[in-house]
Structures are given as C-alpha cells and as structure tokens.
Length: 400
Image (cartoon, rainbow, N blue to C red; front, side, top):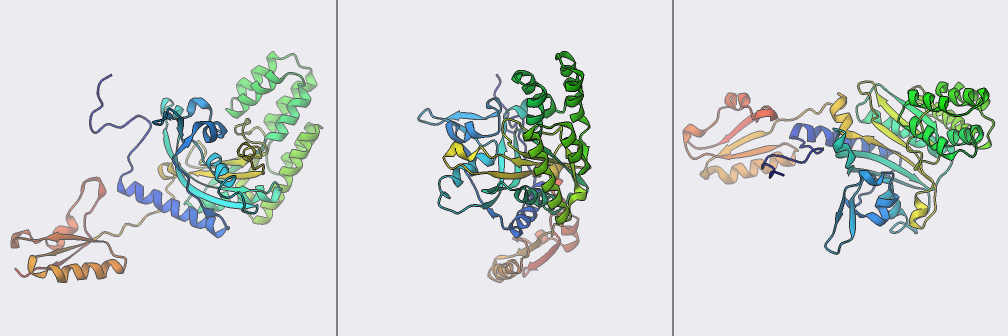
C-alpha cells in the first residue's frame, strides 16, 4: 500500500473550513440553548471508551465499531453513540443523583461501516437523554423537544414519524408464534424499510389468510391518531394493545404541546429493534431523504451498568442539517485590520484591546514602509480564497 500524501485524509472523514465550522457551531449553540431552556444540563464524555463496557452496550453493531488497542493490550473503541457513555456516567459518577435526570450533549461519534457505504465515518450529534421516567409524558417531552430543537437548528419543514417496538413484537408473536427466526427476519426487513422484501417473505411462509392479512396490514398503519384505532383492531395481543395505548397517550400530550402537526404515526418503523424497547421516532427534513433526528425508549441499557432505570432520548444529526438544510444563517462580521508602525505600537495595541472588549474582531499588521500601508478600498476588495473578504474596515496608527 502506497504511503498517503501529506494532504490526504482517511476516507469517511472531512475537514470543516471556517465558514462551515462557524455554521455548525451556531447550530450547536442554538440547539443546546433550546435544550437548556427545557431543563437539560450538558454533559461531556471521553472519545475513547472500553470495548467491554460502553462498546458492548452501545446500539452499534460490532462490525461498525472503530476498535484499537492501548499500550496494555486492552481493546478500546471510539464512541459510536452517546446513550451508552451517558448510561455509564449515570450509573457511576451520578449514581447518588435522584431520578429523573435530564442531560444534553454535543459530540462527534464514529462508525466504521459508514466509510464503506460512502458516508461519513465521523459525524456530529446533539441530543438529550431523559433517565428515570417511563411514562408517556416523558416520551412526549423528548418528541416535543425534538421538534423545538429542529426549529432551533433552522429546520423549518419537517415531519417526525412515531413507531413502537412493542406493537410489532406483540403482533408478530401473536400472528406467528414459535417462529422466532421468521419474526426476526420480518423485523429486520421493516427496520431497513424493505417493504417489497417483507411481502415476499410473507408469501414464502406457510400462513393462513387471516395471518397474512394481519401482517400485511401493518404496512398500512401510517397517519394520524386514527392509526392507533386501526392498530387496536388489527391485533388483540396484550403487548400490542398496551403499546398502542401508550402511543395514543403520547399523541394526546403532543397535541397539548401544540406540535402534533409535525408528527405522524408510522407503525412500520421500529428503529434498531435489538436496542429500543418502546416508542421510537425519526425526523425528516423536507430537503433531505434521510433522517436528521432519531430517538426512542431504551429501558434495558442502564441495567448493563448496574443501575436499572428507564430512559428515553434523541439526537439531531447536526452535520446533516449543516449540509442539507439552509437553516441558520450565520452573518459573519469581517474583522478590522489595524495597521501600525513601531512608534505607534502601544497605542495600536490599546485600541485593539478596547475593540475586542466590545466584541469586535481585530487583525493586527505591522508596517515597516509607507508603501505597505493598505488603503480601506484595497482592504475591502481583498479576498482570501474560499474564506471570502479578509477585512471589513481598516484603521491606521502610522506616522509616515
């Protein structure tokens, strides 16, 4: 394998030039401020974690983890999501804190398989975790906060789809009992939105007409609250019924939040069924064909760290919002160019300090010769490559 050139970087990672970094940080600040206004406090966790703890507990499959060995030969991972590291902290450093806990974060995460798919192996997430409340009210809170967070990020047109793992588990257990392999195969197809494959798999199974109608009926369960009534008629399974009743209560709360117009029910959506235990949701911006937000309930995670507690949350894919949505417009204030000669340096430095205390950006330039003094017009017309104009104003402290 040839040695990479000095300017090359690994596939799946990217550089953020100043204008992109400024916008990404603006999105992050706006969203975190929104989350703070709902009572969520920010937490930061390490980029590196132990594979045997956080790596194993994460929602990411083993093949997608970036693994490495430390000097002692212990397997480490680059964090692939945030719920698992937060669960570790809640179960250790915050063990004595009373529940519920409301925590927010902004972090870069890493997933190795994204590189092979032509997607990003490193990307940014901003999200929340609500730990210690298993009520429909808690699920409704994180969905309503997801709506507010998308709006804070500058996403104006979007839709959030709600599903429930329990409904599909109950329906499948009732329709095809004692056929776990078939149930897992069908859930896998639904998770990947492969409805053609789902129907084809149903056709290959030895099912009665009633069973086939029941399982195909899932594909029609998309819409408003009326979907809950249709789902209750589709399956009499106790788990399925309880899941739909829970989802209906979430919907009622979202109506009272005044955000139901941004939400739809989609019972074909289950997220990662091996990780989520209840309600799941995804948010889609009008400009993009893939999720900019995802979340749900994962009540089994914290018990892996010795503190059993229910939890629900979501994350925004902030780099997707940066790339695909006009969103927040960052008005860049061009710096002042302050040029000076040796005799006037102290005065120039004092003026620069004063301007900076006012929040102005100042660039200093030492002048040795009269011909090096830059005019205001020249400064306004000066460009600095893809970064745009270099200066907005010129002030001079020179005695030539």
